[in-house]
Image 1 (tube, rainbow, N blue to C red):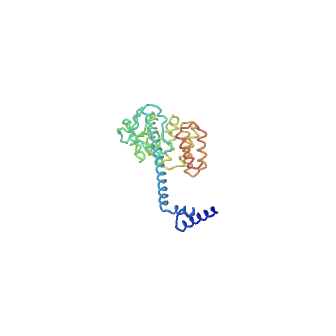
Image 2: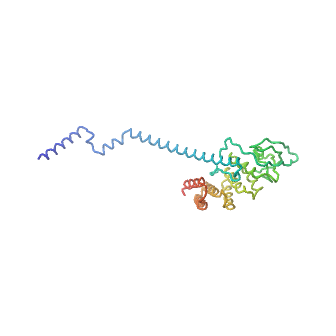
Image 3: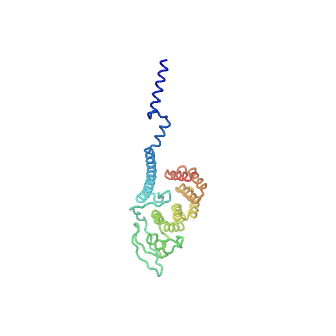
Amino acid sequence: MPRLIGTMLTLAVFAGSAQAGDPRALPEGSYQVAQVTDPRVYALEEQMRQLNGRIEELTFQMLELQEQLRRMQQDYEFRFQQLEGGTATEPIAPTDGLPMDSGSLEQPPAQSNVADASPVPGTQIGNQGPVRGTPPRTLGTLKIDDSGAIVGGTVDFSENQISSAIDGQAVASLPQNADPEQLYREGYQHVLNGDYQMAEGIFRSFVESFPNDALTADARFWLAESVRGQGRLEEAVEIFIAIRQDYPDSQKAPETLLKIGQIMYDLGDRDVACVTFADAENTYPQMSESVRSRIREERAKAQC
C-alpha cells in the first residue's frame, strides 16, 4: 500500500510540472527541435561554412607558393651550375612547361666568343652592345619566316637581333664555328622569359645546325615546349613523341612523357593521357621526385 501511494504522488508531481510549462517535462524530441531552430545555431553553421571556405583558399595559395619556390630553386640551381662551370649541358628546368621568373640574375658570359661574320653588300653593320654578358660583334643579315624558323643557316641570337628578325628585318649570320652552347643558352633564356616565338626560332636553328650535338635532345625538348607555349598543341605533341622515340634514355625522357600526357589531356583524349602517365611511371621508376609528383598530380586531375 505505501508503494502504491508513492507512485501516485510521483505521477501527480510530473503532471503538475507539465502543466506549469517546466521544460524538463517536455518530451526529448521537442527539446531537440527547439535547439535546432535556435537562430544562434544557424549563425554558427554560417561561420563554419565561411571558415571552411577560407581554409580551402589558404590551402590553394600555399600550394601555389610551394610550386613557385620549387621553380625558383630549380632555376637557381641551373644558374649556379653554369657559374661553377659544372653541368651546363643539362639545365634544370621547370617541369610543367611554364616560364620561370628569371629575377635579377644575369646569364654568365659565354665561354667562347663567336667570330665576326662577313658583311653582306648593301647592309649596314656595326658593333652591338653586350647582351647578357656577350661581347660586341660585327653583324650580317638573315631572315626568319612566319613560323619563326631560320631561313638558311644560323644567326646571332642576341636579344636585339632576334627582335628585329621576328619583324622581318636583317640580322646577323654566324659562321660555321658558332658555339652551340651559347646558342642553346640564348634560347633557354627566352623560354624562361616566356618569349616562345623567339625561343622557337633559336631552337629550330640549333636542331638544323647541330643535329648530333650533346644538347640536341634538350634543344628539341625546348623547341616543343616553345611551340606548346604558343598554343599549337598538336604540333607540340608530335615533336615530343618524336623526342620520345629518338631519345628514350635521355634525362628528360620521363618529363617528355609527362608533357605528352598533359597535352593529350588538354586535347580531350583522357584515355591516352592516362596510359602515357602510367607508362612514364613504369618505364622510369628512377625519375626525379619532382617529375614523379607532377605525374601523380596530373593523373589525379585526369581521374586516371
